[in-house]
Image (tube, rainbow, N blue to C red; front, side, top):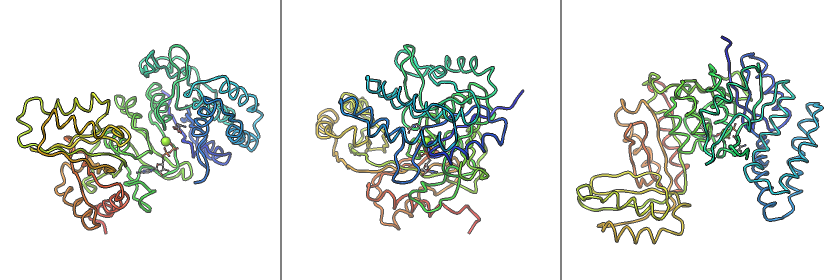
Length: 444
Ligand code: ADP
Ligand code: ASP
Ligand code: MG
């Protein structure tokens, strides 16, 4: 059987014609790279805009009947320049003008946003000489706009079966009425994973602008160490807790079939990057943590009540307050006489006083205090379960830097430790934990 690699290229990997040239070199250097999933052009530098952001802006303006010519012309120029610089004969101007008309005529938000990937995939297919297959034919959503994975896989298998190569736009698909539906932001990673699983590929390559997953966010820590192997579960914890490298939902389609994911750098294609592998992969105890990630802007509501665990229905009453106020709960660490409920600031926003009043009425706590503007930092590692003293090391590292820890909780899988700190200490805390764990045991 022929080997198949599905390769997804992120926005920065396709931000301009120079990046397209790098992508072509990568794709053609291995004939197994048969199915290619591009994102929309990303930023070329820090002051630049992502095409997807500009498209959302066009939609916003159009939906208020405000002229969006200026924003759309920035988008058009990006694509026209790429085509011109790559000497493509494609009539991209006409495709752009049809899209503009559709937005003027009231196209949906998802349709508008999806055009970034649609256009980029058409250009890339022309440049590579690969077939273009629209994601609206392959990625199928049901009536409720939920992905129908089974139907999608069958459809991909039947359409791609006779195609040696293809370019398929990331980020979107269509529902049974034919309406375009997008995944959440960063969702081209999910498209790549779905295609990899449907075609039973040996490997899912995810090409981006960093040489793999680092122990900590390179925008916070200078030159962090690279992770060579990480499991699906650890990756999900880190992605969920704020590391954007791979969309956390990318794991679902490939987990059951165990396809490894390789995060690679389009700008340094010889770097091996990070392998994301099955959860049963053996642990290297030289590294007791795998990575650190974090998210800002939470509110923690801490409740104390002696013997709360003996009181029938206490937890149900507490949670129902959040449910009835339509607030989703992020995390609920608890100890014998206290429990904290962590919610994002944006969810609780104007409802905080009401929620506190209701908890007082229903749960009659001994005390209740809320802490706004908190961050959560997760330290993740499958090696932690067998390594003593990880929490102590984290405490010490943070104490040395004067970071006040408001909450600490260890997940039941012992795969992660989550720490609550003030937003103002976010970068300091991540750097301090990184410094503590950056050297492998036995290394200087
Ligand atoms: P793409 O556009 O290719 O999908 P993303 O912007 O989604 O790329 O993800 C890559 C970016 O993630 C990097 O440029 C980097 O700044 C950021 N990042 C945050 N945390 C990490 C981490 N732990 N390891 C590597 N990159 C990280
Ligand atoms: N272009 C989309 C976004 O900016 C999807 C992606 O990049 O994966 O979110
Ligand atoms: Mg991404």
